[in-house]
Image (cartoon, rainbow, N blue to C red; front, side, top):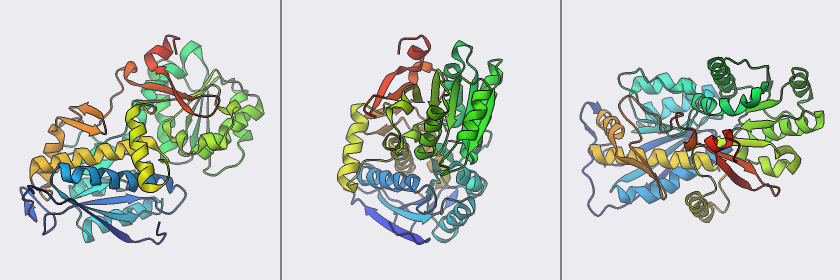
Length: 400
């Protein structure tokens, strides 16, 4: 991919058999292109320390648009900007998309710190915002007109779901987190859930991105008597550093619970001794036929497998929700109408999966934390392949 900061335009056009009459402006908002093309601004870290989040932002967006533009009888253009993996870069990128490119919607940034940086600007501008970022702080459900639609879980919901697993059997819990906004959000969420359960987190340690040794941090967890570990870490490589050090230091936790970011190169960098008691929880079926089909389509187009399948899923869900809203509203430039239509769409589809009634006026979160049976527990087999252990409810009862 081009590593210069700047703009690229990917024109992905579906010729409609019965095109919708999209105008340059309409309703209570003014926007849209003169020829009726729906323009989605895509912002992510093409360069910087985590380019995998950009790769699995733009690629699934391309796949989804290619599949859905014809379904909804729309012409769609993706307009890309590199945020360089920094909050300041994200601010510049979003300003460019909104003020110079006048896009109809924003997809990204996928990194939580960058999403937090641009949240107020996008909300004030009033354009549909499609986000796979999981920091709960970027979502303010109290807003009368909320432009953010999240198609990933948020880290607070994840922490609520996994807290019962972490603290099972009176475990003494320690947290290792990335030294970034996502990691700190994970710490805060676990602490909040621990308080609800009448528990406390015994120790918290931060890992710098790219660190090759974490001995001091694991020594402190061991000294604190930690026997259950939560990893709120952005990159699979950093997770590997932590699990390797756990093994080297002789810390023997009952369980290590992490998140789906571990799927980005962890198994290639780790060995079986590092994942024996390691699990993560996700609401999607990551080993089922549907995601396998999506991965096959992805591989056929890009000559390699998805890096972050969960992000691929979230991005495709976001594109479907947005284009369904545009089709219902009849004008991508009528932002209010599109937002209201998205709040009322009947379902969101990703391949063969369908989620009914995904959003409402006071609920722009695709996933909820209330039902433990709706969250799947995954681990790795002795070959490093992902496997489902059961759902969370089953695991808490000791049957997974």
